[in-house]
Length: 139
Image (cartoon, rainbow, N blue to C red; front, side, top):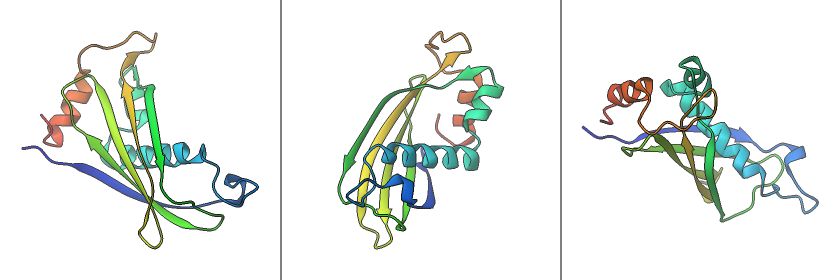
């Protein structure tokens, strides 16, 4: 059985995240993606600390973002994080940020690979990741 795993978390734009134009500086959207990914991981048992506890690291090797509408200081927004299942030894996440009016503000994707603590790339899924995928019906 294949299913889509998703998690949504809400955040509020802080003053220090805005540029002189009063809108969120473009680089902060990547931080919002990371916040969404961490919330997803904590909720579903695949956070960085879980990976690290198993003796692995999961560096981001690709990140992209498409900007649709601006966010401004004080705005509330939601970041939806979706795990994209694939057979490779990597994690792909897609993100959708929506403002309070539920308009899409930005979309993006990150790819993370697994390494050991020395930085050596894992070519097969680490056992803990295969177990996690099995637990969520992703095998």
